[in-house]
Length: 155
Image 1: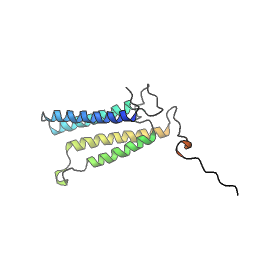
Image 2: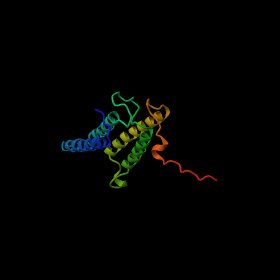
Image 3: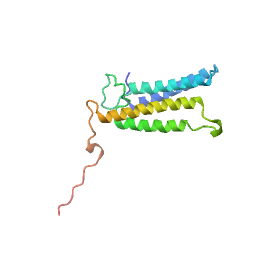
Image 4: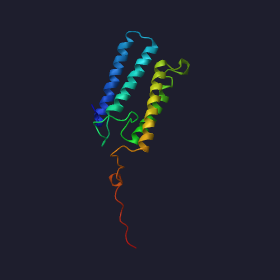
């Protein structure tokens, strides 16, 4: 299954997030140790990102063949933006929620590790996509995003 449209990509993240929250709450009812809860949460987050990287396709990207292992997005700019967002989220996850005296929970650390790993993967994808453009990739035409220049009056 390949997901190309933006609304289905958003629906993918919404559904997988809700499913992970439901699963964590169900498992919390069994009173698992904190380390097990953190591990399950981190694995669910990793599965969500890996599923997205393998299933999502960009405009003009081939749908049928599998992506190379290092390629996380269709375009270099998307990889860079996602790497930056994941770094910001990872740093935000390490900020204690209830105060500095309480410290950082195991779930926060596990999610921060997963975020850092995927930020590194997105950054690697950005570097490699910039270095060797995928087959069929073309730079956007300037006419697509810039108005035509105005004619100057003759002197």
